[in-house]
Image 1 (tube, rainbow, N blue to C red):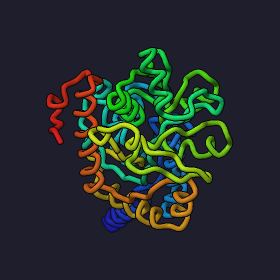
Image 2 (image 1 turned 180 degrees about the horizontal axis):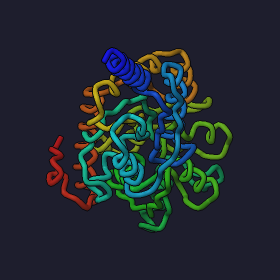
Image 3 (image 1 turned 30 degrees about the horizontal axis):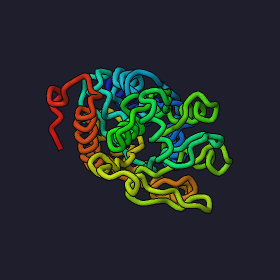
Image 4 (image 1 turned 45 degrees about the horizontal axis):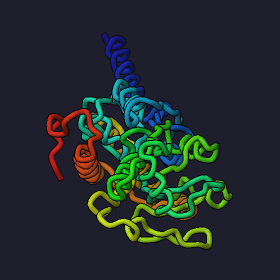
Amino acid sequence: MKAIIASAAAALTFLSATAQAQEYPFRDITTAVVWGAGGGTDSINRMIMAEMEKHLPVSINVINQTGGVAGSNGMVYVQNQRDDGYTLVGLSESNVTAAIQGGWDQKFDFWYPFIVGGSPDLISVPADSPYNTLEELVDAAKAAPGTIPAAASGAGSIHHLNLLAIENGAGAAFKFIPYEGSAAGQEAAMAGEVALVVTSLAEQAPLIEGGKLKPLAMLTPDAAEFNGSAIPSAFDIYGGLDQYLPLKQAIGFAVHDSASDEVKAVLTDAFDKAISSDTVAAWAAANNYDVGGQSGEEAQALFSKLESTFAYTLQELGATSVDPMSLGIEKP
């Protein structure tokens, strides 16, 4: 009997030790970024995951799961994984439009997000473009509606929404060409496949500095000083843009909202330590990003506001296929 009791006690000790050894995380984590490699969401996730690794006992591997509507393929992929915290989704504010465009069937509060930061959008053209001002570009679009090709990342992205806002505010119509991420759209502009591109300053900065792209206007109320020259504000050129703009980026990652409190706590601790590091501050300054640092309920509230704003702005612009109200998205 003593032998049996001793054996049982040993077994319990082993199981307890095993459970403790497998506290989250006990194996590598994967982050599936919904936009293409080299874009802003991809770059930010690779940077923040590398910094978070310093505060975790495992590695974080970053992959790309692109395609669908407003990044829906990547979100569906992670949605279908277990909510154990071992598969995260790398996303941005643009993903809040996936549901109203029929690519996803969930409100964005399905996620428990972490916001790293964002960068303002601008309109640029290839360096050899005949257009030197936003007015020249818009006038050409008015003269030949729907014929001038424009890249603005995927349908429903913040860049696409900003393009729609410019069209509405300036009374012009471009030929929207969607690409799988900002990098692909910028490459298309440099290759002459499109006449203009709408992405963020952070994404365009090295291309502007390298003489590959020519900036025409910031899609913010203020002009910007960059690379020794001023980039004018589209707000100073066309009135009424403040009805739709500016829309601020919110780039980061998320775990299932149904994940355990332990998973959320571990990820939050690693994220908070990473976001407050000198490495992240230096990276953000060098790459024209503003650091956010919101997570959990605070980040959910920000995304909820973005979801509402995007949904009803796109509906007003005639770019939705699903009624936001049917998804429980209330008007802002």
